[in-house]
Length: 294
Image (cartoon, rainbow, N blue to C red; front, side, top):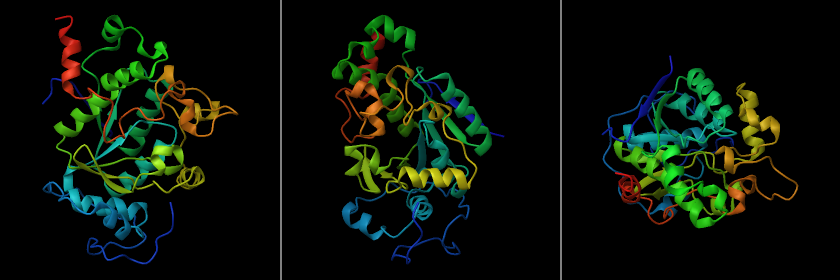
């Protein structure tokens, strides 16, 4: 049975190559597929030379990299998801190795109905240990105080929207879950920013691991097909990327990247995967907004 926990603000694919010189669990076979139970929480990972580490781990495939992250972070490891177009692939990939891993979903309150149905389907099918986080400001309250920020067609207004509805809840989730490392399903071909990322890096003081960074859209398709997994329902309607209903659209002939279909092209990133998110992304800005009607 799927486990879904909604936490309120007040609550405290490439083939494997030769094995690298990195310690792997005794008895783990390559290619992976072995379930690794979550270990006791490890201390925060030391500050490594991330460039050298990324090179050293370069021959690990996606599953092996997940195993490595589990060894380093223990039960301080979490997985984030948006229940987007290709999310079934990475959720399946991760939970085959770590069935109990906390899966963090930031629900903005503005997702399409199809996303909520898709989330329920995958949560039940994959028996996800789902942790749902939301902004302490309800959509109705935010709109009353700030207006519909996305309608302003302004980058700074959009940044403010993302701080309230996405970045603050995610940062709070990482704190409350005691995360020392997190897994995300970013791919290099999605945006110019993501082309510059490493599979192992740091963000917000935590280890950030991107197992499928090198995968192409074709790799994702083959994984979904092989394992009989679904795309997001809106994929069949031309959506290459799905986020909030007001900031997502089907892909067009002039779009160079799938993320060009998001945020009226004002941004390609919402701040969740930036080391320095838009200014004011911490809880102070949220408290200021809340106190304005206190």
